[in-house]
Image (cartoon, rainbow, N blue to C red; front, side):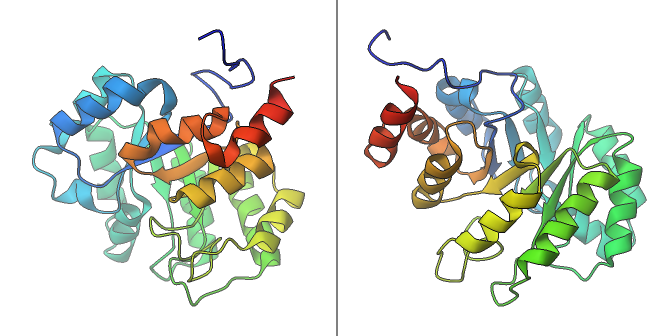
Length: 254
């Protein structure tokens, strides 16, 4: 529409301003509905945690996403389950059988040696686009900003394509406090030493999303977006919602 300006927003396929939707168990009709309205605004889909292990006929779901040229991966918890049970090789074989080209590696719940995670990233990045999630899912475990910066840069050096900053789908851990407040000092420290174009921030709630858009602009990469919020997030990016209207129009409509 001529009354709005959107040329400041990167278009697909893009490397910045990514939106990763969290699929918690959508059926095929729900997937079709989501993609009908929001496909241009979704870059990746994550099949949440271990849902892929029990979803009936997971290949049908994956084929549907592939039909719409929508890249997807399994949740990092699925990798952690395989690691905990010494089944990583079998898990990787399953990923290949499903025809997936992305793989998420995380250690947010299980105890994993840092060296083991880095070796897994280095090895698997040869065959997959590795998304490495950094941060604990335990809201009581507050890792220091120095450790975040060091760990994220190590994982990028090991071969991770993107680093996911942990926030959980509840927004109560990682870069957030247990009361859902953003750890702003932590975010600032990360941005000062980690390439921002390599970070995907988990931002499950509107307040989180609008904060990151105001801080880093419409082309900030965000994850853990519900299927029903994919279109709504794009309006935040474009200043088509009260939360970011004045910020985006004053900054990008000049």
